[in-house]
Length: 353
Image (cartoon, rainbow, N blue to C red):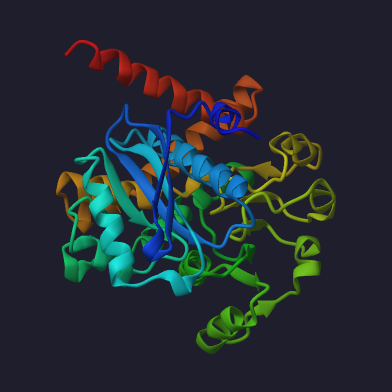
């Protein structure tokens, strides 16, 4: 697929490539939109099979960052920085070079943490650039974003439970968490506090062992059996586009959602879920707790404001569910329409300046 064909999939605005051969630094920067504010560029280091895969991922991450911010009416645009390589390429100079590149954007692009990038890595970038968000508290940030994102998801899950079970409590509900990495493990902690009955699954045993050491008597299922596990909520926190049509046929849940933006391999497979009377909430509807934190950090507000605004995810999710039911539209389509409408409205008033 050509670069411009990639960009047309999501109507993305800009795609850049940056390389410093001496440092094995190969970066792809995607800008989806800066209408609402500076681009929140989630930065991911991954050993992609091909440049084509890396470009597609960069554009998708940027698009969903835009979509998540628009749904929550936040003053952030959507961007991404994809770093092609293995963890061994990382060092201080590698990230300081990336910081120098960030400065070229002069505040229109802010780097944030994602898979493969640590808080120590961000601190190296910080030596050269001020254009970072999502820093830990000891470096004047608002704390680690995964915890905030998990707490925001709890609000979204309460809204789904309110509509499906007429009770916004998660206590006693059977919940499967598929994928217990940085975010999934935080979500497990929050679900325990809510009193949910939790089953976990991950292909990496070390992750399961960490949870087992902290939580006694937690149920574990094998990856090949996870979709068949009877539950009230199935939370996909693993790889994007992992769930195939045949997996949907195996599902025994009442609500499907999670942290991944694209749970289904083919978006149109949500009709199969509808036929099984499974409520489907794409991850981007409920996983915006980090967007709330980052936007507040950008504007100079503190943690108390962030925590008080996580409930926005509850009301936003509930409104989408109820409007979808009344209009006959699926929630995925409605969420995209709402986000695009908000961006158009903001864009129109900015023309008044």
